[in-house]
Image (tube, rainbow, N blue to C red; front, side):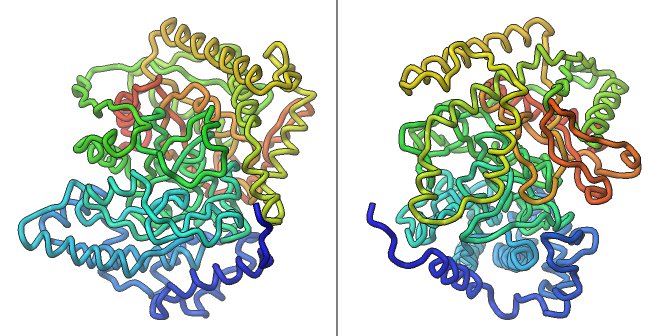
Length: 562
């Protein structure tokens, strides 16, 4: 590689200015509104959602505000199909709201506002002829920055990938367009996309709209923040260790991680070595309503995605029979692990969810820490991730500094070493040959997967309920490891995060301090008060349809939906 000549700081400054210039002057938030927030935003508690910062910005008309605020995905699609709303007005409303969100929390990377409005005009002309282009006709959909969108960049927050314009779109982007969607923005990610944060040296830091002093999670953190601010009705992220589910938890949205090779995920911007894919990344939706998640998969089922992407399984999305009204579920209750204790709000939320499901007649089967295999699966996953050093090499090549969140993960791993006794023999770190190491890890993962098969059969489980993380959103760069999501990537089990409550009075006065042999983020009730809480539900590999169906049952119990 030839060394880059222009200092990365100059290239970044130019890129940021170019992105900023794409926001029309009339979409700018007045300075007096911005000055009413407590600066610096990343260090002070600003609740942009409860204080309705979007309406107060004055950028959206009342009608545009209502379009973005009062419609579910299903209702938007119905209004677009009937002509009650035009694609132009819906697209314009979401473009403006996304622009406001960007000015408030820094959630966007690329914006395609003029192109989106031009496409919306085309879609409206088709509808006037009596033709809908697909099940997502006219619906604005946001995408994570690692998706290629022809004519834009996919830098994934890495200086090494700047100034590389995408000549083609990723298959899933082409599919969404074929289904009638309007792609209008791309969203921010962390450096290397391997931390539960959304900060990088190219686009800066994304803030959590519920509390700007907290992280929105990652790596699909820009998606989580944008959707929480209702700057997108439906977004698509990716997940290799919790990257959809952690932002869903932190930002109070639904987020679904499908089984690998169910949703097109090829020809993306990656910072890994081609061919070195050991824990597969998956693409999946984030949304403020569970029905929107289902609509995403229903839309995909109307075509044959495998004809667009050779890396996925040619398995149609199955239509399941409706649950009988008296159908009772057998749900395993995932335990906290002694090394990774749960913050009080997460512990309370999980217990409350189990109690409500029991009261609704469902059977809760508590699992033990030994049965959970949490540490063993995390151990395999972390060793697999460590086989490829391409991401670190890209950072070093560009001469940019390492992101603080990545350094914090390294600190937590070092803290973990004397606490946890490795379960793999020989220790993978002592095996110099990478192929031998890979074979050792694959064999261990296969054994753990078979143990989970036996566990599922032993208790005749329909699903498992688990914490999505040790904590809610925490201060920036403080999240660290994600043990309660990574283990499911290692198993390749579909899983969904369901919002449920928030940090509140029930958590006041409950202390939490990690012990000497524990790893956990710091806990500060006063800072976290008001942060969204959630639970995680999972089923076994390729039971994605069942996972969503059971999630609907659980969601109705927990949130009294429907």
